[in-house]
Length: 499
Image (tube, rainbow, N blue to C red; front, side, top):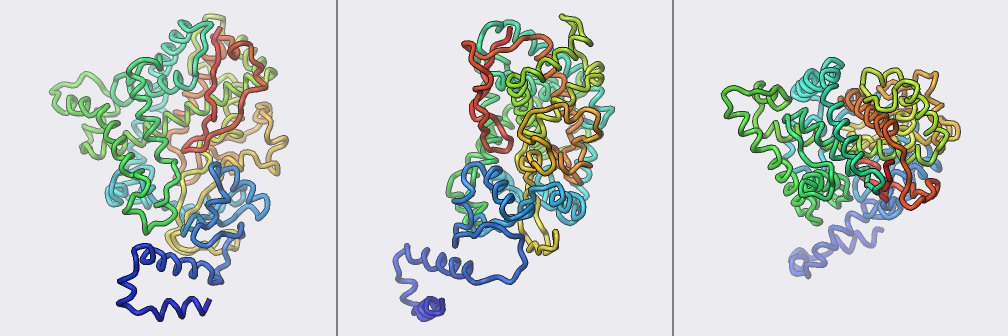
């Protein structure tokens, strides 16, 4: 080690500048390698041995939620890994999650905006409800504003007729597809986008038929969400962030602009209108003095968060029910007792369906909508479970692993909704063995809306149709592999036939 250092310190300055470009890059990288090889005295959480410069990137692979869960089984509930030069601490048990989300919640509520974010850090800190660096007064204002007008119990109840209408349109569309194979995720995504579109703009955003031109709207939303989860070299090596080596920042800005174009004319019309005849969320924002920039950031975050997670959860629920005939029959029986054959499912009635609620909870447990809760950041050095967490470390909570923890859940990998009957375990952030919507100050503000939407759609799909796989395929042969992203989606979309 000393020999390498001596060589580098003896390089003549003039000769250094005359070296080929390759060496001008290689020498700084060599310094980084040497720095990583020097033993550190910090009492970090345990973890797998990392490679110089690369860290644990090659060991983690394309499904980090799975590989990090396996590391936790070897090294313990709180581990540390290196992604390039970035130190990441991962909690994979209820106790370690509670340390981050409850015990140290005030300190560890800080976040780092993703490097692909289409805005400068100062803009994100001022206007983002998801990625603002800290819990500023403006962030608190945005949370309170959204809660009052979108997510309070009173607000969610006032949206009931809208959700019921959009689900009724979905059922009508599926009746026109009886006997045909449908990609249920596309129909679900369109239904949820239209629900949000009417909530925000009093307007549908797409057709449910995914073979029409309006499917472009869905494609833009999906691509924008997908870009946010793609592995980014800039996240691993912050010094390279300005280079945008993969072009991800450029693509994200392009799709962000396409999203804004979807509603920019609506915003302009509403601003110019003397008397508006609607009272949607966009009206409220305009009347509250929001600028176009504030509107664009907030709508992008709310629609991105609300559409993909709900779609994924319902698709997984349908998949599990098809594979588990006993659970399907119990849910059908509960619906038959409470509704006649042609009755429309209403939200006022689904609160009386405990097995439906149990099916939704069990789906959220075994297929957590977001594999990792949105990463937090340590703004200063702190202690978690007697380990030292250095300043600016990123903190991941592996909700996927926690939901499948065999130390917490009996027969953890089996779909058993009965485990949620006659229990008070819920996803409101108090039970750290079940945190699909996070917990603490950063808990998802829209979980009440999501609960109503998921239960209403799932109950309607099961009540109005018998479902089968194309060509009489065996549901037990369904591919259950998931695809890592902002949300955990099925690797192969569910293709089913409504009857």
